[in-house]
Amino acid sequence: MSSLPPLSVMLNDLISRPSVSSTVAGLDQSNRAVIERLADWCERIGMRVELMVVDAATDKWNLLATTGPGKGGLVLAGHSDTVPFDERAWSSDPFSLREASQCWYGLGICDMKGFFPLALQVIEEAQEHLQKPLTLLATADEESAMTGARLLQQRGDRLGDYVLIGEPTGLQPVHQHKGIMMEEIVVEGRSGHSSQPSLGRSALEAMTDVILALRSLRVDWYGKYHNPGFSVPTPTLNLGCIHGGDNPNRICRQCQLQFDVRLMPGMQIEETRAAIRSCLQPIAVAHDVSIGLQTLFDGVSSFEQDINSEWVKMCEIASGRSSGSVAFATEAPFFKALGAETVVLGPGNIDQAHQPDEYLAMDRVKPMQDIMRELVTHLCI
Image (cartoon, rainbow, N blue to C red; front, side, top):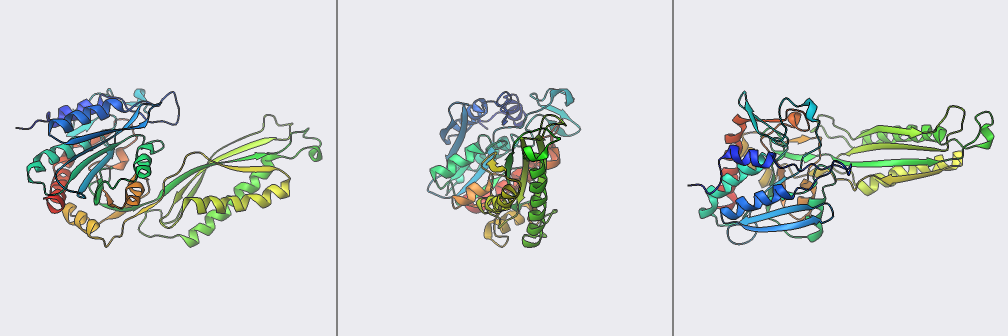
């Protein structure tokens, strides 16, 4: 008899515990209640549990729970947080599991609290047969700054030989994804009366040249980085928002531009920042203004696991699907940096993530658990 509650009870329990991650302080929440519930379930089935403080000030935690002898083995990994939400757009309470039309609805059910109960059931079944370690990992803050995964990389611990991240991929193995960086450019000029242009230095005029330079750099990247494995086969640079000036008859003193870059495999974050900076210096000289590049968050590297690796092939066989690519970023680069072969593969669909009435189709449960069972058998039993 299982020591775990029924699947729907576990799903409801996790969803009912808010764990929003946000760069807006007023929306950001602790994930401790989710981590403590997962820890309780792991201990019930006899796993060795470690709770890790990620950020004491915001009460953010990681969970690392292991069972089985020796070293290496398989890690089933996911994040415990969700994005912010608009309750008015939901058809039901986001924090209460709702079943309708063979789907489960709730905030984070797809991305990605729903993965943990599925994984725990597979771990409990396999425990008495294990010859190598089987680990469950739940991280903090994936949806904002990925601080939970960053802490693991800083510690340098080898979590396992193989990592499966249960992000929503529609049961397709993913061996590569783009990275992301978010930056801000600030131009500082001098204000003045608009009738006397020579008395001021327009930050807004300089920023128009900055934008043109960024667009030109983007075109250069198109030629240098092209990967047909992605639906958008090139890097993207999105000019997200711009703010500057305060009145039509005043020369603009300051202008800020925020943008993101989606990095292709092979593009390095610091090299990309250096290329952007090199475009800015001549514009600053030409307009006699100050131009600074500021990082909005540390960024996430692109990820690529060799498509011909044994791990990718195992996941393709277990899922019955060829591996592919996604445009969204995950924690995969951090685990790969720790020496683990890594694949992203989960039951949800990214189209349902970050949306009102987020759901997980119930017919995805058994196939996902069957995939995990086959991988556990191959690697740990």
